[in-house]
Image: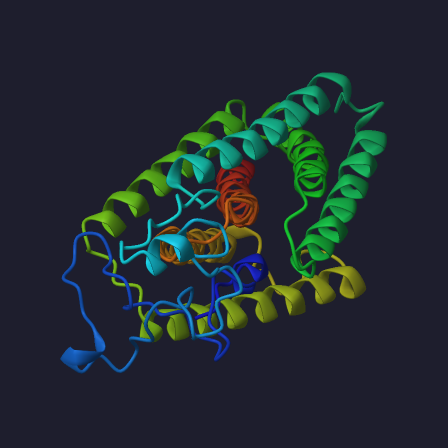
Length: 309
């Protein structure tokens, strides 16, 4: 199964047939289901030979004494497995990426004032940073391997954009909006993690199909609304302002929560199947994009609610 994050559709996080073995490894909080039990989605370990695992290696290749032991009748000594992705790796890389993003946001907030005399310049810098961050995200998404400098640079530019946007909303629309959006993002993330680990969210092919269909419809509708706003002026079709804006903001947060569950599943599968350690940077990249999505939706809802006061 391919995640909504293009980075998770790379090797180590998906199968060649386009679907990750979602029930190949047991999800935390749920029973193990295998092909022997009639699971139509169980695909087995995508990292095990001969299923085309690019990371699997001959155990004798790293142990020059294994063949000698075998010839002498002794069982070969298995080489020590190193360099595999762990949860600590994912947490560390994600913390590093988010740390750069938060630091860049703080610097942008402090150095780019949003008073009447400077808001135009600051807003322009923020939009420019957002566009650069988007380009960097696409470049990393289509690279075969993770590039930590590229990912951290993306986080820095995304942080500048979020810093300017947050400063505008916090200082000109709703005081304390940025902190409220941060707390909302943290609450959603914690809630999804607890629900996923408890098995209340079952990430399978039906779940994936529903989320992707809903996301596609949401993105298309927002794109149409943006085009009407650009060429027709005003708020376009009104999907991003007023009562409709709040409703679609909530829908956006729910979609972000669903994407977060998909990301958790992809990370869990990568760890269970022995993805290489460098793949943890891709996990951090994907999780960061999802968290940014949720934060921006929260910030939008807060701005709409306070602008109507």
